[in-house]
Length: 79
Image 1: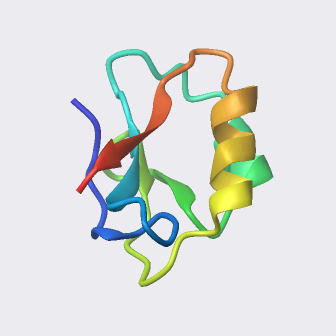
Image 2: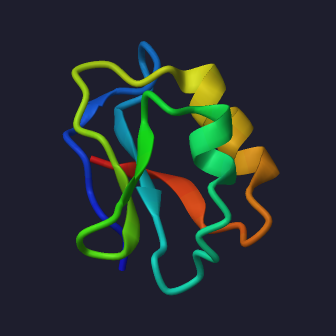
């Protein structure tokens, strides 16, 4: 089960989507943070990665994080 962020538009005419992380698959490699630090962070206190609540998500950067995730644990989810 991933951490859910606030629901925001993904692209005009496409419904609402948010980035999510499947924490059961995440290897905590920090790759998503390197690619897209405005969206992803490590919650040191809880010991897991999370999606930052934003009003608007940078689609291209999130797509790049999805593409480069070695655990394939980041995805867009319908809001």
